[in-house]
Image (cartoon, rainbow, N blue to C red; front, side):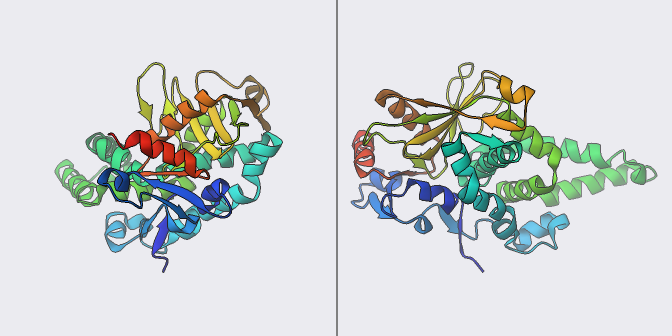
Amino acid sequence: MKVAQHYVPQSYLKKFYDNDKLWVLDFEKLHKGYSDFLSSKVSAQICRDKYFYNLDEDFKNRNPEYANLDEEHIENETFKRLENQYARTLYNSLVEKLKLTSNECDAFADFIIQMKIRNPYYRNNDLKNNGTRLIDIAKEQLQHDNYYHERFRKIPTLLKNSILEFVMDKKYNGENFERNIQLSSLIKRENDRKTSTMLKDALRKHPWTIAISKLPGNNFLTTDNPGASVSKQKPGIFNTKFNEDFTFYFPLSPNHCLIIDGTTIDVDFFYDSSVKKISMKAIDFQSIIQINNIIIQTMNGLAISNNRQLLDHLATRNRAY
């Protein structure tokens, strides 16, 4: 059994290597005054947690529809296809060829969404902060799907209510609520094409641009939760805002960052979805700093780069806080 399970794919992290190593700034250690807050690591050593995606007994008891799945199904099946595809073809098609086939565009959008859903930030912040509202939505959906179903028409109302209350208590109550929702969401997306397509369309329909850093030493960094959104209509920096007015930044390498402009429609892709064309633009030093400052706002605690000097500067700036 695989003990350490990565919540950021190694195939992604390796694009930020410097001589087969990464520089990692640990903000928790920095703020606690530890001397080893900045260290050199390989991808296998970071962005991982013990049994993070294991389908344990508690999960299967609360989600009997997944009782027959292998304990490591998410790690070995759900993630593997996209991680391998990113390493073999998607990254090069995006950065080198500046175009994706329809299937590649679909896969890359799925890769981004999966990266966000699988992350501890999604579990510990997005789900935890919206837990009550999510439970209410889940109850409504369960009631809609089952309460008036033809199979249950002859069951007395009082009994139906009791059964629904029992199911809701079994499925959604308990200390592992956020974990159960996260894992079931990851599995469901494998087979629920309607939900999966709706999320991916929110990214695919907008223009994609690769921002390039051509200045030596002025690099994009990434984090242990890659990607962040901003919005003109709603102030703040968001982990997964892909609707209405948004701009999403997703670092690809020290010299490349994908920018998805959610304020307009990709007209070329709208008329011909067989090819997703990506534009490219060089950006200045101040723009790189601005993007890096946005990116670190949704991290769990690690900033990652090929450039030690960049992280040294970031550490100096944040020691005072």
